[in-house]
Image (cartoon, rainbow, N blue to C red; front, side, top):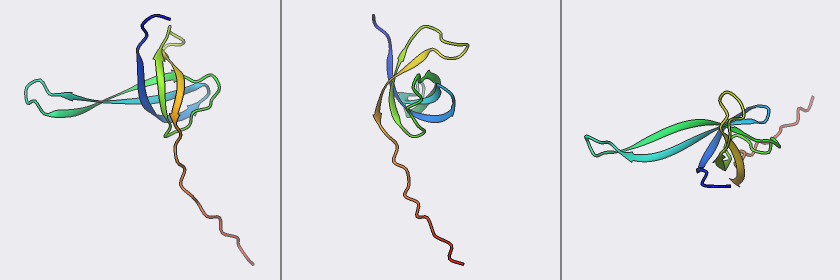
Length: 93
């Protein structure tokens, strides 16, 4: 489908229906001081099946405007988030 940009990022919010907020992190050299700095940008991404969760690593792709802010769609979940193990205690009365 042409040369559409693809990015890899982490889902930081899954509170909306069919929409995820994905944070893309990249390293860039400062133009004056030549120090490597971390730059982040957040995109609203269309997730048709609501299958990604917070903490997942995903691949997103540029697409036509789907709403006022959504310009990307979810292509693939590359790594799912590891949920912490929580032990449930039984209350004995």
